Image (tube, rainbow over all chains, first blue to last red; front, top):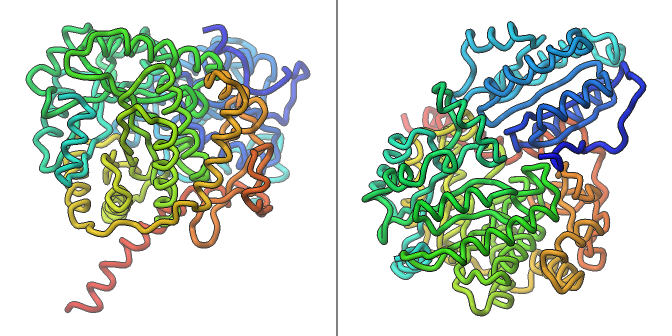
Length: 158
Length: 423
């Protein structure tokens, strides 16, 4: 799958940027409207956005986080595999000491059977996500979470 | 009887063929879903929709899920042995009930092999439509993969009839792609299959935002296919709206009914339905059956045919796009790759690195889709581009939600009227 490992963005940023947010899908998810929308939303909150696009392999996600050191990683999934994929990805990401403190959130339609149960949400949080945004919540709770991050916070309405 | 013969027979009898999107990991559940589709009170063909791990060739994740009882969003045809799939289909699939495999893969060779080994001869996709919106696979690799898969399909023995391929190009991104580009891509994928030797083809078109514009689009699709696929047997398949679906049951049923009207009024032969669960989750079998029966009944209630100008705006744009691509290279696969590289084809909002990303669409007040930015599309003499307002997250969301909101609002108004008027 080597050809799949290339990033959508052009050059790789080596300087750590406090104002960059990575928006990404996970390996099995081919949907992109959610990512187009999030790219606009997060940039309106005052961040630079790197949008990794559809079907992002775990290795690419990790290398992008390690090289860009973003202020936040936003994972979005709407194909029903988000719970399973999210558990795998967060454990891999948190295994890197450099990425243990990076804020990581996940949202979308995360389960095959509709909204996640409280137990499934708790599993994701326990595995290392800082927040889980169910599809029903809308953008407001995500905006509030993003506002708590130091970078970009000045541009967020109270 | 083959897939194409079944559809042709139904069309001659005045019946719109209706088809679900349906896939379950467990062969017994998949079989029950197909049995329910077959038993539905409508002219149906069956669908085996594959899961999204299979689509990206991640058979390890499928195996992990199957071992641990984790739910999958479709039928993993590569992991299940051929005899399991044959058993799943046994006594159901046949001349009176063809079954099509739907997947979404830019690297589908293993899927084609598994499907052929299981005795199935109908599937769908295309080198552009299953690459750009849905994968990270480079477009030129997807073109090679799809060429190889056409060969796999044609080289295999198909006792049930000629192998059938449906383009997915009429659906790029699901929503907010101007109809002329949907038509052009559906035609180009059909021509790609045709030049590889496939002679049984269907061309897709996904319902968009405006009935008149959609009818013009199907007319354009027919005119271009008639000119470019002379030796093939082909039909038109309409997809019920593929964007954000109404949240209310009545809104969802209303939108599906409009899709059936689009299909019948344009003489289309087949319709792929959406259910009342679409906005919320993967539908159950019962919800799919209800959708099939609602679509079939809606289709039977439509009598008139659309009166459409042959030389309409969608046709003129689609013709210009197809013509520019065909002039890019003698080999159609190369021509498609070159066209995307030059921006002669450019899908609005598509994030794939092989898409130029300069063209932008907009929704006008009448609900017609148009071009806000043309980029390098060869349409400067055909269309007046309009500079829309800057796109924000909220204007994008309102464009994406336009159809959902329109049908939900209509559905929510109805009880109010009933309370005020009937009692």
